[in-house]
Image 1 (cartoon, rainbow, N blue to C red):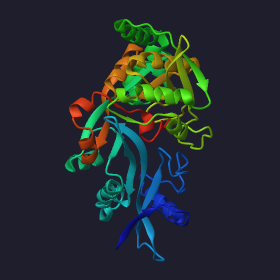
Image 2: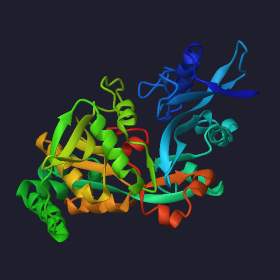
Image 3: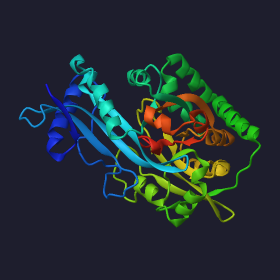
Image 4: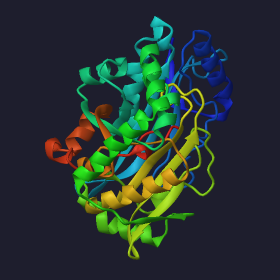
Length: 381
């Protein structure tokens, strides 16, 4: 049966609904967007620096009995690599009936190849380990895989110990955490841990954060000043950031972001985008109130001050835990300087052979690529 890969469209919404229903009926956790217009960063103008587009794999395309058997999303974005401008794309998916029907087992590979044909400078950032089938496939296809860390800092130890889900799967471990919470030893332990990390850095931070409604000319000036301090980075001028974090928040995949302009002694050092949400029954965070530093930017030497201000803002909102993903070693160290625990090798950056070639010499470039949650599928809280 012939299968065509086509842009998502309004007339094919019922096909996607049927596709999702078929996956759900087989107890698959996967699905795809029914609406062809992305709620987050739809293409609205020709010169837009970043947008999302959705594509479907349609069996018997154009026939009365056509149906959706797979799908994927792309997020093309203006990047600056080694001082030159390029369009680099993050991908989401692919999802196909191959998840529940072996007759479609090869469709994922075809979808991946179609993505790369449309956007050769292709990457994904978010896979969790070498054991995932998609990661094994990318390895066989010659993609570059580079592990990046996850960072966190506990604000309310008792709530963290009692309400997190990931560390409480084992009943004995859960009981131990309850004891630590009840006795106050957990609070003392986390205070000592984060305090020791802060003391080890020997740094003191004095920056402040101001909530702003948009990124203005000050963000453009900062971008011009700091952009070439990074070998590979998505464009973060005012236009790009106001597109990624628009005034009207339309997606329900994460809460409305807060934009922070970070200053010290009247000078703009950088900015951060933060989100927070009271979770309920989350597979990882359980019932915690979680904050996330979803994006940030400034000169590498100001990273500590920028993260200090962002963390202080989230802590003031009463969150139990602050998390982030970051690839740049200098920024990761700045998280540690702010008392964050760094867990290495938690998230894979997967680059197509074409993107890897652009990033050469990779051993040098990987010391200063800049990736945050907004460079992937978003904060996803």
